[in-house]
Image 1 (tube, helix red, strand yellow):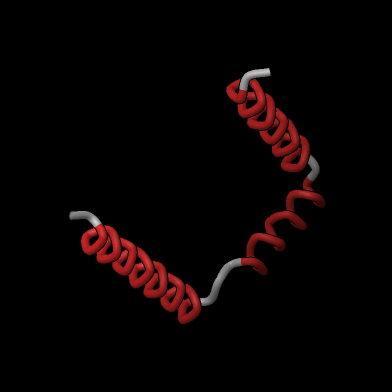
Image 2: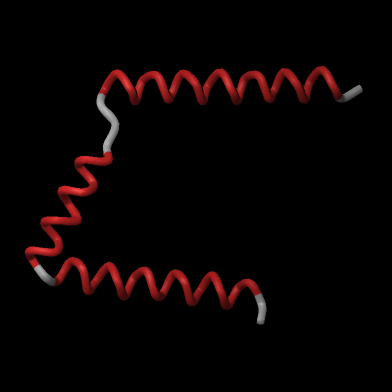
Length: 68
C-alpha cells in the first residue's frame, strides 16, 4: 500500500474523530480544557522559542562550517 493512502486515511480518521468529539458538548469542553492545560505559559513559551532559535542557528553554523 502506498504511503499516500496511509496519510489520506489517517487524515480522514482524525477529521471524523474530531467531528465526533466536537459534537458532544461535554466531550468538547473536556477537550478544550485539555488544550488549555497543555498550553505553555508565557515565560516557558519564550524559553522554548529562544531554545529553538539557538538550535536552528547552531545547525546553520554547523552546515556552513562542514560544507566546503
